[in-house]
Image (cartoon, rainbow over all chains, first blue to last red; front, side, top):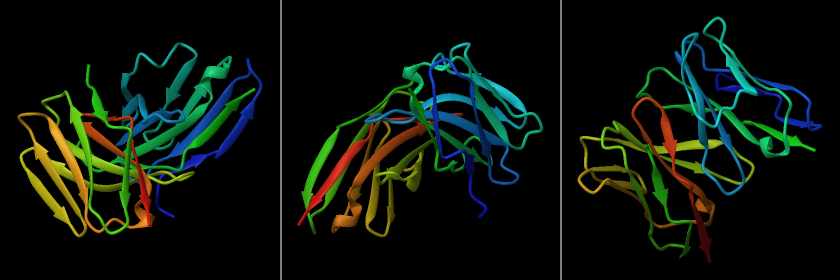
Length: 113
Length: 108
């Protein structure tokens, strides 16, 4: 499977715990994006990387959220001190260039209880 | 900031055409995309149009772009029950900005 892979697919955590999600983009895709989608809404942009450089962070990304892409390949998104409002589907996408088609992973569904 | 808007619901009879509309605010958008999302599934790219085009046809799908009015539409000919899903419009300059999605319901 050469698509975008996300792990885990589902995560249930208690409020206040930290969680980390992983995204493996399509090989050789320079761009990697993180989005969040809640029920009944479209995906909301969180942040993106060009290779290992994080180029933009949305205002939605509070200081509890951090994303890395250390070697320009896979990326991690960490949420510290989770809150119930963090419950959502977290989507990762990758593309070859800024204007090329973005391919999405299946997402990680986070439930904070 | 950039914004993309869509109507929330559309209901059509099987075999009819569906037209889903979208407006966007960023006039520097280079590409405009239509994604499909079925229940419990990821986002699937349906089609896209470059900003210097005004129409693109791909089998049953026709995309119309009015750049002056920043209006995009997706027409699905001969709509089938399998087309029932949420359709997202997205604009891009350096990142995709999505609309809230239009839920298409196809009834027999």
